[in-house]
Image (cartoon, rainbow, N blue to C red):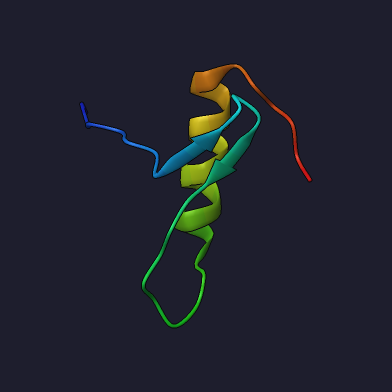
Length: 46
């Protein structure tokens, strides 16, 4: 499976901002952010 992954905002190569227009977060949304963090090789969590 191949997919285009595009994060919304990356600030100072440190803070990942993922914008969602939804009523609530689902596990798939957390998985998406973790995938971005792995691909960026920047596993910092705040």
